[in-house]
View 1 (cartoon, one colour):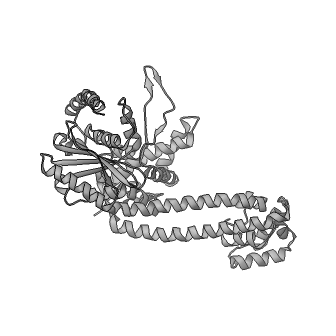
View 2 (view 1 turned 45 degrees about the horizontal axis):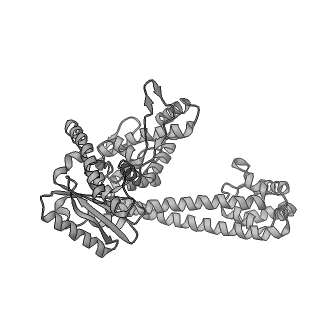
View 3 (view 1 turned 90 degrees about the horizontal axis):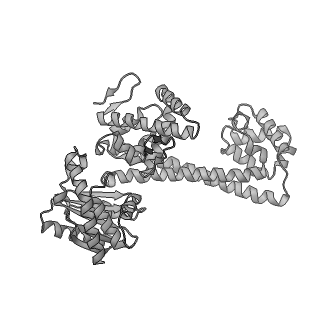
Length: 458
């Protein structure tokens, strides 16, 4: 083990010298301006469900905490805090950088605890949740390293030491509260979509033509509404609909829709024609299919009810936290409460980012150039090593903005016509990159969107 670290040290110093020279020659980013690396303690935490393994090193790569396991509990966090404070008090350190991998939700508590620690506040703690892919790639640059929690904690600390961190610091529980709500809303939407898709397979088996009707051909504006539910569950088979009289169907539709359908006669005729064109099944299948469809409708109704509840909770949270920035995003045509709150929850304060490029990189909406000599690849995949939730909201919002702002529609069509493959995905991703510039400009300048000019908020 000692031989491995001796070899590591010699390799790292060869790597760190060019890094230091380039840092001194360059203007440096905001992160380098804020932190004096020579007087900084670098801490790496390998997160586990039951325990965390901690390593702490100085700029000379000397171990101050060497692969120390601590429980992933409140008492374990307090133990880690005491260890760090003891080192900081007995040294010349003026800052501490703490890195941990974004491993599901197991690191949330320790990141929250350390970023808000009063004992660490005099040392300006920067807590970063790192992308595991970036840390793994950094580890691969070394030879003969074992795979264990101790080594991983050291690699994370050294990753911070050489200035490889480009994400934004942990923003605390205020943004976490909104983030949990918006992410749960997305979870419910995904469950709702999945349930509807699954239910359609059973609907096709029971009433094949009804499942295939779409748009103006469909008898109901909402194929998952109460009237559609009654048609699919109250009638045991499509044969029952085909054999019923038009008068019976019209009366049934009026009762179930509470006379909200303007032309029940036409609706009844469409349903009966669809029933006659549908496949016939063995009688033993109708009852199980009807039960499954009824269960799916119950799930859909439950999800929609919870969706309404969480929408109110999101609006309350975002208005209590950041009403001005929420109002700015809501002023963009095509934006609504979902996109505005989702972007704010993942983005936090725009002032944490030096420019719009930093936001694009944080969201993973960037492309790596593939060029050598006279060759330049046409297909450059998006680098998705970023916040997937922020990327989702930005790209979805871009699709909505394209439908509402002529300038963005023109830009989308131009990018769509430039290639022959992946046209929509490419054009939408490039449009979302353009949208990021707009979002950053409005939020940074505290301005509302206007098609002709930008109004300043007071």
